[in-house]
Image 1 (cartoon, rainbow, N blue to C red):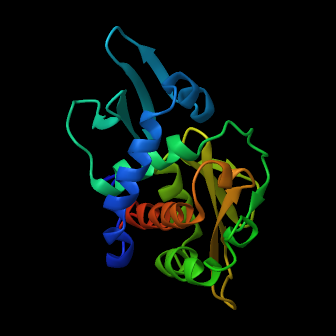
Image 2: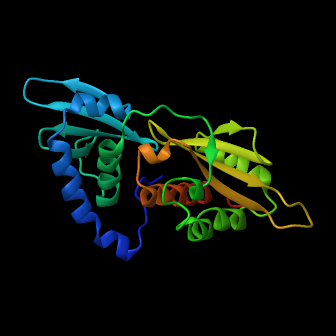
Length: 216
């Protein structure tokens, strides 16, 4: 499954600027400290330092002092993926996970995005799996989701080493519509800005829909 993320044109237009600023900020930092704050693997060599970071189910290598991003085969990665990776490394401050789930609304500056976010994350997911709770479970487990005791079914996924997301699904049965929601650890704002967290939540829902088995 592709690790690339869909972005709206307005947000995409700002990525180049964000990427340049983030890369420049990281060049002035100690990569070993960046690794410690983000949970990245770190290898110090004579002429460069290499960090390895997992993003969903792919791993990437970031090298200092140039702060370039490559996949493990040495190839480039898409601009949105590169931006997400470098923003993660830049924002990560080492805060411990709180192991408490909240909606986007409860994260810093998240209330502004909450309604729109539900419209392009949980709502289309519930529509895709309506009256198919077992299909949702199967898709989540194919993607490596870790079961949670939440809703009719809930699963935890890892976007980055310290950015877990939960998807909770409520079955409405025959009388009510199904519902689904993406939740975040309370510490999420210490690892990504809220705009990127919203895109990660949307991306996760798209991946789950893509993992749904088409009935024969």
